[in-house]
Image (cartoon, rainbow, N blue to C red; front, top):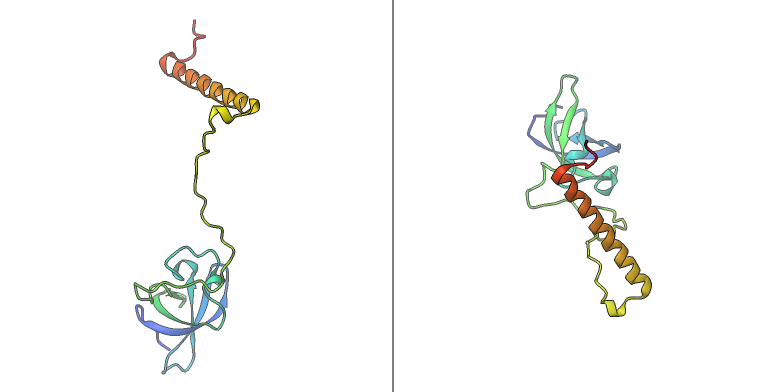
Length: 147
């Protein structure tokens, strides 16, 4: 079977590895099927952590031939064979926690603070002030131990 670079072919996923998937191409004039590889970066438009989230063995896929090297290895792409508006959907859904959003700690009024809270607040403010003073003195003249 002759494959042409840039052409879209139907294929079937034969095996999946950590770095890509091997797809067997089929056409009506094929006496012998040809196998090419879809690299993990060419499976979906977004980041692919696990190929099994998008593909499984014996899935029918459309692929575009990206290139053929000197050894006859065929590079394929699934994401370039998709229409621009279509995005692949994960087949498995894992328990993904929602993204963490930074929320500053709410300031507690001093009237509601316990003695330990007030002491902790005083200590934090004191350390911040000392660090600011040290930073300021380093900028102005460096260390004062010069002779």
